[in-house]
Amino acid sequence: MQIDVIGGGLAGCEAAYALARQGIAVTIWEMRPDKQTPVHQSGDLAELVCSNSLKSEQPDTAQGLLKMEMRILGSLLLDCAEMVRVPAGSALAVDRVKFSRLVTERIRQHPLISVRREEAGSIPAHPCIIATGPLTSEAMALALQEISGEENLYFYDAVAPTVTRASLDEQRVFKASRYGKGSADYYNCPMNKEEYLAFYQALLEADALEPHAADQGMVFESCMPIEFMARRGVDTLRFGPMRPVGLADPEGGPPPYAVVQLRQEDQEGNLWGLVGFQTRLRWGEQERVFRLIPGLKNAEFVRYGVMHRNTYINSPRCLNGDLQFKSRPGLFLAGQLTGVEGYMESAASGIWAGISMARYLQGKEPLTLPRTTMLGALIHHITTVSPGKFQPMNANYGLLPDMPQRIKDKKRRNQAYMTRSLYDLRKFSELL
Image 1: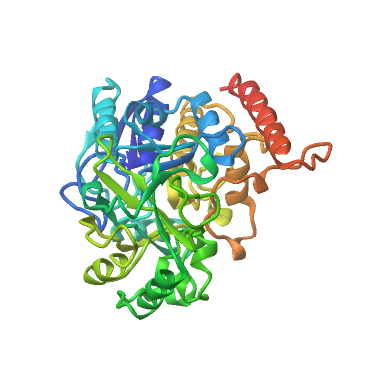
Image 2: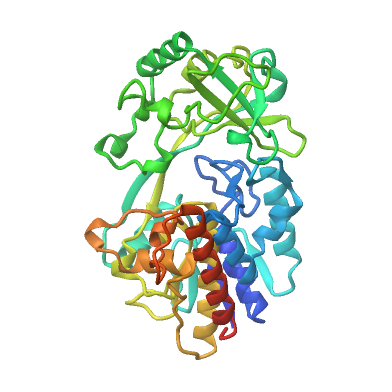
């Protein structure tokens, strides 16, 4: 049997690879490049559109733990990421162009995986995995709405702009990582109070695209546009993406009042993204306002921030713990459509959907991941939380059940979570 995986993003690629590892032939349906989305720029599989950072690798962080779990479950994308990584302190960041090209190459080379460049406008009657992502086409969104019996939910997030290193004023910026964690991999643009207030006022007055539902409070908190945050108060940005703590000027300059960080986006170090600066400002306004940031006066923008729609279903009403539709056996969902939020969360859900589909095809009983694992806790949350309060969720330690004995020290507590999770997942993987 040839299984269809609809969508060639992070989740779809991981789902297809997980099935192929079980000896099951797979066809990935991907509508790009014939039909593009508002934010994708190529036809490559697993293209990263919001950021080139896959977040922390620190073992005592939720993101670091999730990556370790993904490796146990046989992640393809993390193998590719290691080959095209760029400096990012304690985070795993990649050259986004080389990353998607490498994933595409690995998928095409697999003897059990084929790629079909065509939009799937309906849901097949046979077993399949839908992983069309946050920019699901209108036809597929309508098909999902019909089969789920629920109206789709929408939220809006944004993409941060990218500038060239050559255009930075290196007399005004310095290299450092916050609190000295890892190597000095970020460019930092320090501001004094006067510079910050001028930037803040310009941001408030800048012309932005109409956000539609975003103005109704439907913006996902971790992807809040910078101009939205500014409306919450003059110091909101200084306690958010522009917080100055842990970033001392190595030349002994005065403590900054606010700081804008830039993160490397390509292996050559030519492209740098404004960290936390997702935006829906008009492109001309982005240049005008962001060039008020010290060090960016002559910035060359190679990628502007954009606002786009994300789609996800009401998973607590629709999905079981194996990511299979309650109302339709053999139909599985993966990625941000399920309500997981984040690159690695989406990819990890794809691995689990692929493993679950393989068990379904083999006639085995469905399994539920241990709640003591980060991925298990995340999937448990999105499939069991109150449907009336359901919102997208990132991996975080708050999802895990408490340890038998309370551990007050946060670092020791997180290490205990990690040890328990990895032990339980390795034991669980013996059942697969």
